[in-house]
Image (cartoon, rainbow, N blue to C red):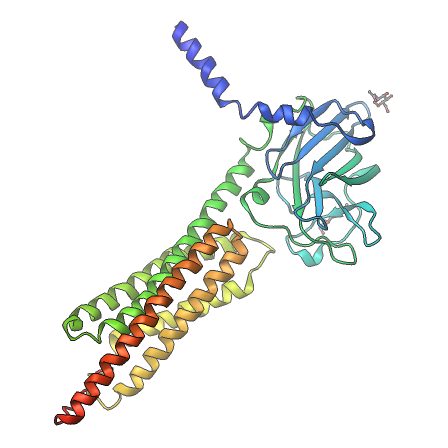
Length: 396
Ligand SMILES: *[C@@H]1O[C@H](CO)[C@@H](O)[C@H](O)[C@H]1NC(C)=O
Ligand SMILES: *[C@@H]1O[C@H](CO)[C@@H](O)[C@H](O)[C@H]1NC(C)=O
């Protein structure tokens, strides 16, 4: 029993999410000696919320502290009366104006579309608000008067962005893990233990599974359209030149393209459709349209290859070849292009983009060498054939 108790205590200590973070929070001092009763470490985007709540006047005084994504960017903190997510947020957004002074404005964020975001009235009275910007962090100071019967557990959402348009509209934020998880609850009665934030809330789980699915989608499509598919073209183009590989190239080519198609459509495409249907408001039109075109062409390509391929010496075979090669190269180009579009959206750590470019570089290098070898082979065969009686079959 004692051991069990000791074990439980140890477990609790280990599971306490980084108590050192609260040191960061409390060791922070705000300019102008502004004082708040509580400080909550917001766990994402290096942000902090200092706050005091006066329940008899139901007024919440906050100081939200966060580094903007870029010096000309913005920071935002919001209460969402409905649920912990961006749409519906009653937001305070701070940024540097054209004249260089900091400002903070209220925004009723009614959709995910950046176009419809503009300063507006919000559901709460905000009798005081100001902002400052020193040492790389912006701070929003505000007093918010909550409706009298407000539930003591608020949904809070916070965010940082990298740009603001000249007319004071904040630009779209990034879509990294941190940007998607920056939401949680704030328990006004509890006194702001940092552990209460986000880690256990369902919003975080939703954001988390979405994040995993985005990565899954990216990897499946990069592997299928971005790698296997071009590899299959390589195999067809370069292996067939070697007479000893005559049978092997054909089977490998088919295997590669079918595998690319199955992974691309059933894995990558399906996750793409789910992600697209979940992201209300934010639309990545180019990425989606290229994906649809890819799917249509790849399906046509397979149908034509499997069911409508004329015999080698058929008089229409040359047209079929033209179609098959043309569509094939187009799919490869669109596939790679869409991998890059996806990388722009997902915005992963730099190393992923670099790794993908390196893989393409290696493939390209190998292609150059093989292209040269192919030409040597073809020219050799031509000169052999021109001295011997032609057998009328020149393969490619
Ligand atoms: C809370 O608000 C009430 C009513 O406005 C006020 O009388 C009181 O002094 C406030 N308490 C604190 C600690 O500010
Ligand atoms: C915020 O926008 C929503 C949707 O457009 C609207 O229903 C709501 O009344 C607005 N809230 C305020 C305080 O203007």
